[in-house]
Length: 204
Image 1 (spheres, rainbow, N blue to C red):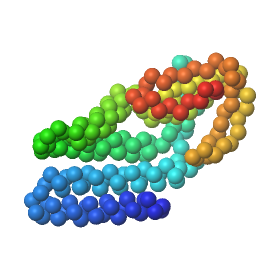
Image 2 (cartoon, helix red, strand yellow; image 1 turned 135 degrees about the vertical axis):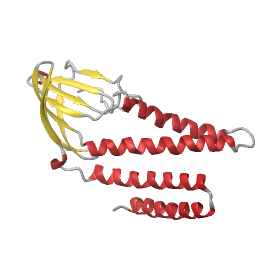
Image 3 (tube, one colour; image 1 turned 180 degrees about the vertical axis):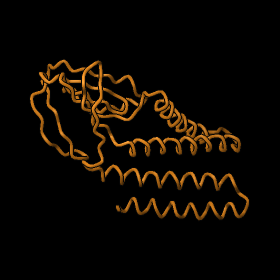
Image 4 (cartoon, rainbow, N blue to C red; image 1 turned 90 degrees about the horizontal axis):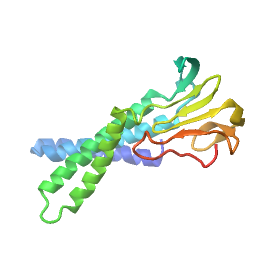
């Protein structure tokens, strides 16, 4: 466990103790926010641990049919996607509730409430994107025609004839890099997501 994770854990414990104290005093709204913030910290730590400890045994490999052709699909872990969805749900509740509370108690211009509302709209927008399928669990599809990479908010396809080779690389995590020709017929769809975080490079 890193120092940051340990600090988040201690802060979450402190918030839980504070929330229990607020309940004892009858301060239920501050207790709710303390619980939500503590839960958000715990989810953040767990998500980070899951991302760093993914292994080859965690993948979901299946055979499916796409457009009448058999496809081998390697799907991203459902646990990680579920944790990120839970993070956005708690963030939406925390920021949305804070925006309402700050607005109702504002003495002048509700600047802090507007900032919290903007963060809440971002989180709610992400949840709507998940519910409508614009952001979804991704994976890698290998067919006779080529490679299709489906991310959370984008899709990419390269035919086998456009691929020069492949090699193992280390970015944030161990990855297999498929290298294509610069003028390859690279199909890209970045219109599914609400964030625009695609990570695409200029060339395949």
